[in-house]
Amino acid sequence: MYLMDTPYGSAPLPVWERPEPRPRAAPVVLSRAKIADVAIRIADVHGLDGLSIRRIATELGVGPMRLYDYVTNRSELLDLMVDAVYARIAEAGGHPGWRDTVLAIVHRTRAAALDHEWFADLLGGRPHLGPHALAVGESTAAALSRAPGLRGTDDLQRAVGALDAFVVGALRREVTERRTVRRTGTDESAWQAALGPYLTRMLDTGRFPTIARLVVDGAHLDADETFHRTLTTILDGLTGDRGATPGPAPV
Image 1 (cartoon, rainbow, N blue to C red):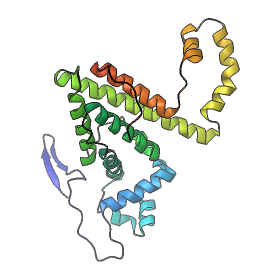
Image 2: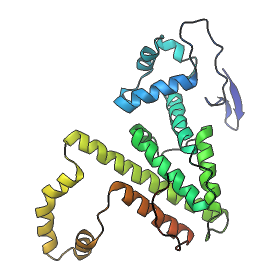
Image 3: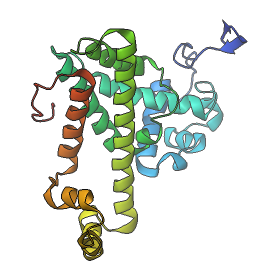
Image 4: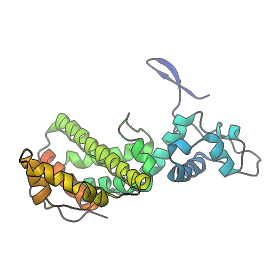
């Protein structure tokens, strides 16, 4: 067991800092990256509820106990999976402007969450601290620190927190809607059409004039456009950089 000293006593080293177990003379060669890759494929199909050490071991063709040489519990397994997704998100860095960098990272995060819906379930709790997650956090914070209107660490901390809150809320909402469509067989347009007559009657009472204006006069955008426009509006508000036009989402 690899231990480190903390103010609260000795604690195991995080999974990212522990060396890989020594290779065994076995038909199947394992690594944490290989285990995480298989776990991600299982979670993509069956969700986190369908993920287990036994199932991963079966896919790999090894006994379950071998996996505990690499991860001590389910929490460490999820940490590895999450950081593998962040490795993909980290590829979005490197844009010259602060705004383009933030837009690219956030849109890459959305793409990752839509490809791996379980990832959205793991957002919003305690911060992810794997090396790739830290790299994404560093790129985002460094870009925002160059934005106009942010003065010092307190402003930057609030901006990062507000951006994180939007990303978590928006992604969870979008993933929840996708799951609802699959479960019910009814997409958002069909749901709106079914409730349209009721909503019309309610709005015709005159009791909800602002909602009526939003429904009747507001733009009805697809999910991509809605996410991008809301994101740019939030960045405008956080930084005071209102000169930028929404433009298309970066690739």
